[in-house]
Image (cartoon, rainbow, N blue to C red):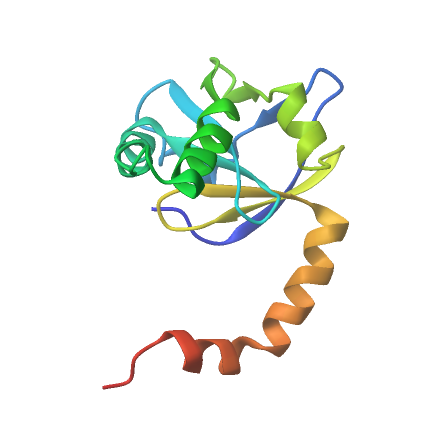
Length: 143
């Protein structure tokens, strides 16, 4: 389970060191990096990724939007190896598509991680905090 947030630096070689608060969520030396729905980079443990990809690949190929979702998701997914120093080499193409540079914030999203440009996320978070009660009321059923 992933929660909280932590500022990290991507090194000059494009590697991110997984902090101890997130390391235990990856039970194998593999993880998947994907383009996220909100223009962020998502990191999935292998087990969680398999569940997500099964959902996406089961979409109807006769539906144009389903094909677009499959195509975008699968073509922007990369299998990564966690090295002995708990680092992952982030794909350059995903770093460019998500505008990630040196300073990033990693956010726990229960079953996966999101990675954002620190400055960009700081602005997004301000709006999210301001709208938290209103948004919660809209999406959480209080029956």
